Image (cartoon, rainbow, N blue to C red; front, side):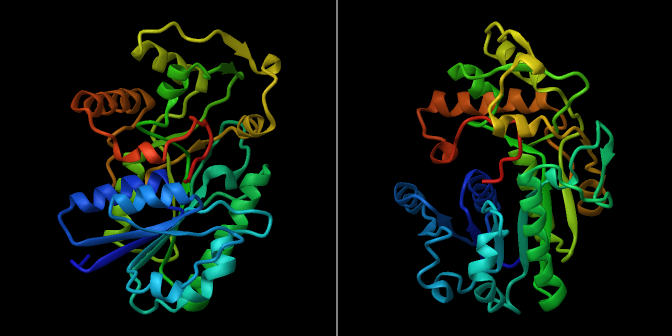
Length: 320
C-alpha cells in the first residue's frame, strides 16, 4: 500500500473503528471516512478526525462522487434486508466509478450463510444453505457484491464472520451489567472472532488482495456460550449466572435464531493464503485481553476509541 490511501467504510461502526486505529498505527498516511445513521455519532466520529456522513436506506449519500472520491479501500458493513444490501442497491454505480483506482473492496458477511450443520465443520468450499432469515439475506448480499467482481472486475473480497467480540462488546460486559444468561443446549457451540484478529485479517487481505476470494473468520475453538459466560464471570470475580436448559430459556426470537445453527468453522484459509496468525485463538485469551485493555484505559483516565460504538454483547454475528 502506498502512502496515499483512503479507507471509506459504509457503516463506520465497531469493526471499522478498530480497523481505522490499526491503519493509523502503521505510520502511513491514511485518510479515514465512512457513514453512520446517527447525527450524534457523526459528530463524535468527526471529532476523532474521521470524515463521517449520514447514510441509511432512505438517506443516500448526498454527494457520492465527492465523498467517495480518492477512495482506495472500501469496506461494506451495512446490514441487508429482504432485498439484499442497500449500499449495493443505492451506490453500486457510484462505487464502480472509483475504478480503476480502487485497490480493495471488502464485504462483511456471516458464517450464517452455511446454515445448520449439526456441529460438523464447514470451510469456504462448503455448500451455502442458510437456515435463518439473517443468513439468507447475507447470502443475497454476497451475491450482489461478487457480481461486481464477475461483471466489472471490482476487487471484491467476502469475509464470513463468526460472532465478533472485543473490548466493550464481550461476555465481560454482559456479566458486568447483569444481562448475561448461561443457556445450555446439548452439543451446541458458537464460533467467535476477536475484533483485533478480524482487523489483522482485513489488513492482510488489503496488503495482498485476491479479488473474488471468500474467507472465513473464526478462532480455533468453537465453544458453548455458557462456558464463555462462566469464564467472564470468573475474570470479574463474580459467581456465574445459573445454568438454564435451552428448552426452559424462553428466548427472544432473535436470540433463538442464533441457537438454530450449530457448526464449526474452519479458519485454515486465512492462515494459509493470508499468513494470518491469530492473536486470540480461543475465547479465554480474548476475554483476558479485553479486560486488560479496558483496565489500561481506565487507569489512564482516557476514553477508549471504541466507546462510541459499543452495544450489548451478542453471541451471533455482529458486523457493525
